[in-house]
Image (tube, rainbow, N blue to C red; front, side, top):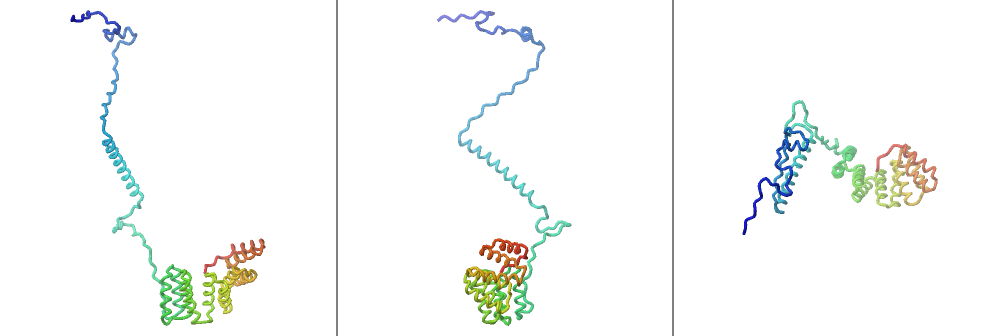
Length: 289
């Protein structure tokens, strides 16, 4: 085969750039630009091609990154908790000039000065109930009933403590014992009437409450609970009379005025009911029971 003919030197190839072969000065003159050399900005080097990795490798790498992020969040959370903690001396040390933090003072349980005196036993039991130590009060009263302080007063107080704890059967036993010890105990009949009314036996409660009132025991409280029972039995006029007796014995008896308002509401006298409710708001609140 014949060799291809070589191109002659100095001849321009078809389609070649007409500006090829010109130096920079002549090229700048032809283009109308400044012939002084310029400092060209360097182009950023191209980033190396990323190496492809398999799915497992990508997942493990992402897991590692997430683990690092979680570690950072955990450290930040610890720092926040440390900042929120009150500054103070370490346990077992007291900083100079700072007092040790105060601790809750546990008050000693009240005890009767004379365990053989029913009045002293009742006083100590009431103090325990006021402190929220109802169980200790019950234990104290039960022990007293087995000793020289055994009396109707102690049994009545035990019935009150049991009733306050919601132990109705135990309260009934204690009050029945109090009535056996002293059948003329108005307090025993009153507490028994209140207990029976809480059981919903309103007719039986009326009998006990009238017995207590006949013995002259706490007229305001007795008349109040008598009115409650009579109202439940739909004996409205008798209930109204009982509540009126209650507020007459204790003009500041807020619950007595309020129950009078309920009675007048039931009778349809709205104006009188509003007046009773107003009296109840102005009266002094009485403890429950």
